[in-house]
Length: 230
Image (cartoon, rainbow, N blue to C red; front, side):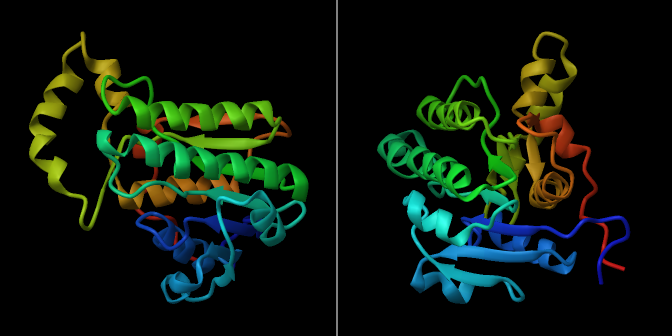
């Protein structure tokens, strides 16, 4: 059933079969939204139950635009899995090219709201990755789109837990005044917090042509899981 006071959205998700995309898609479906997932043919069976798989190419503006709906929401999650400094070429070929394709598609299809999972910035490491995401944000701004940009650093969850050994150090640098701001901006968030932040972004778009940025502290403030449907 539809949660109270929630406007149902037509949502297209790119990267919807991935680490963040699949639980996000399931959460949106559970809350009553009409969800489509742009995916490759080989990934159709990874689309969450209740969402409609749409075969297409996230690097093609024409393909993304064909799957989008006028006045709908486009959630862009495509990215290179397990990013590392060795994957700089992939960040250009996949991460940056795909968000540029989504921006062009959003303009062509009349998408009302683009939600983009970027990355916390500035940052002292992973410069090629951060630069690709920063340029993706620039493309959104240049496109004049209504957008929510969500900036996690590292999302803890199944298969992505190795940084937990660093949590005592993270807590210390968050406590020290000299490093507090940077440590909080580059802090860890959980997968549940990330999904909740993205659900909230979908359900609460900013005003027309406004670009809202959601940083790590705001992601952490989200409920551990979105409120269940009633």
